[in-house]
Image (tube, rainbow, N blue to C red; front, side, top):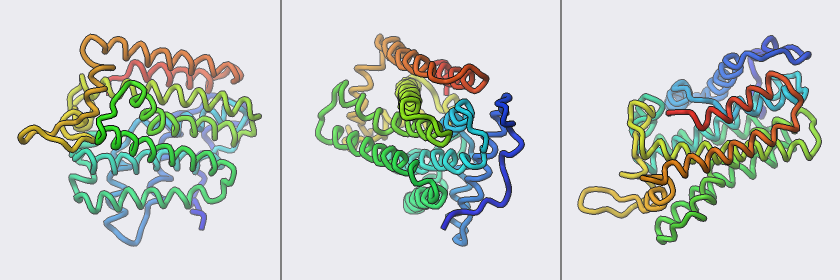
Length: 315
C-alpha cells in the first residue's frame, strides 16, 4: 500500500510564481518523511533506520530532484517529495550495506549501523530501507521505470567492482564504469525524474539526466580523492576504509589489502591527484552546460551552485 503522509510537508515552502525556495526546509521535509516512512512494529528496525537517517548527510540527490522540479514549473512539492525521499533512502540503504562490506565503524560522524548493531542487523536494516522505497514509489508508475534502472545500476556497479577486484581486472576504464553505475546513475535518476514530474518534454528530461549524471561522476571522483587524502574527523566516516578494509579480500600478514586501491592510486593519488580534480571539473563543466535547458531563476542558480560545490567540498 502507499504510505499516507500525516501532514503536508512542503505546501508553504514555495509559491507557484517560482519564488526562491528555502533549501533547508526541503532537506528537513525529506528527513521528516524518511523518518515517518521507516516506522516499524519491529523496534530494532525502526531504531536502526532512524539512527542512520538522523545522522544527516548532504541530501544532494533529493535537493537536485526538487530543485529541477521547481525550475521547470512544478508547483506541488508534496507530490514530488516521496520520490525525493525515495532517492535518498536508496542511497542510505546502500551506505548501510557498504559499511558491512567495508567493515566501516563510523558514518556521518557517528557509529555506523554495522558498528552499533552488528552485520546481520545492518544487512536487514539496509533491506528494510529498500523495501520502504517500494511503498513510497507505489503511485509513480512512469518514474518507477527510471528509478528501477538506477537502483539496478547501483547493484551492478558494486558487483562489477567486486568482480574486478577478485579477478585483478583493474583499469581506468573499469573504474569509470564502476563509478558511473554505482553512483552517477542515481544522480541521473534524481534530476531526470524531477523533470518528468514537472511534465517537461523528453529532450529536457534527458538533458537534466545528463546534468545529474555528470554531477554524480564528479562527486564520486572527489569522494575517492578525499578517501585517500582526508582523515576520519574531516570526513565523518572511517577514512581510508577502501585502502585498508575495502572491497578486497586479500591480505598481507594482518593487514587487509584492497586491490581496487591500485587503480585509485594510478588515477587519483600522488602527482595525479590534480589530474583527478581536473577530470571532476570537466564533468562539472558538462553539467553546467546541460542547465541551459532551464529557465533562468533561483532554482537553476542553486543547481549550478551544487555542481560547483562538489569540487570544493572537503567531506
